[in-house]
Structures are given as C-alpha cells and as structure tokens.
Amino acid sequence: MKSTYKLLGVIYDKLPETIHEYIVSLNDDTISDISLEKNIFDVDEYVRKINLSYLFSIESKETLDLILAKAGRLDKVVLVIDVITDNRIIKDFIHKRVKQILWLLENTCRNIELVI
Image 1 (cartoon, rainbow, N blue to C red):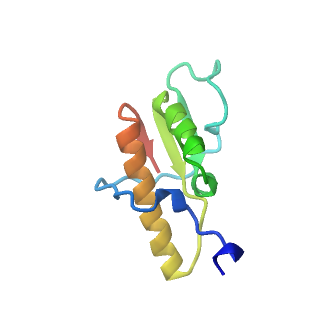
Image 2 (cartoon, rainbow, N blue to C red):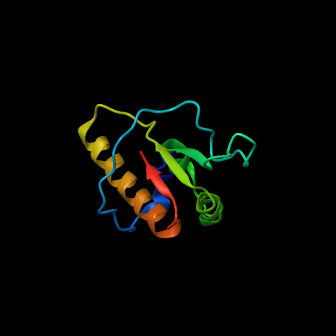
Image 3 (cartoon, one colour):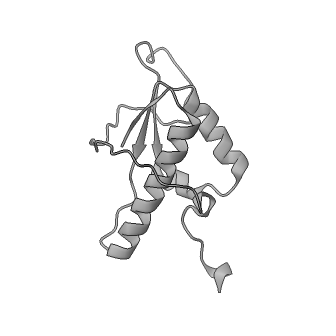
C-alpha cells in the first residue's frame, strides 16, 4: 500500500519544530527563486525564495544539503507557502512541516533573515 502514495516531506521526519514566531507576508513575485544565481539586481541584498512545494518534493539528503548550502549564502530567505488546503488534518500536518523546515533553516543558515 505504501508504494502507491508518497508522504510530503518525509525527509523532515523527527526534526524539532521552531519555537519562533514569524510574520507572514504576501508573496512577492519580484523575488527570484533559489535556483537562480546571484546577479546585478542583488546589489543591496541577496534574497531568494523557496517554495514549500519544492521543499516537500525533496527526497534525498544530498539535494537538501545543496539547498541549505545555497540558502546559507543568502541575506534573506523567503519561504513561500504554496500548499493550501481546506482539510483541517492536512493543514495541521503542513503547519508542523513548516515549523520543522524553519527550524532546519534557523540552525543551518544562522546569518539569514527568514520571512514566510
């Protein structure tokens, strides 16, 4: 049965959750994706966004480590919560995963500002 579906963000299982509160901001389409390298528009601040759906799709530790290494070079990371549902159980699950991902970013990339 388990081979017929995939759980979201299994790689984050057993990680602690962040204890910090974050201010939720609106998605800003002018912020580039984390896959883009630094360019001339990053004069004042090196800012990139990471979509939650992308983080959920990561299955290997190596891929996650590459993303975290890239995030560590940024001044600011914007986590875009692009996974939305009306189901209460799934909302609680997503909320838990977001807190685990924020904990991971806080503890891996200490010199960045995190925005949701």
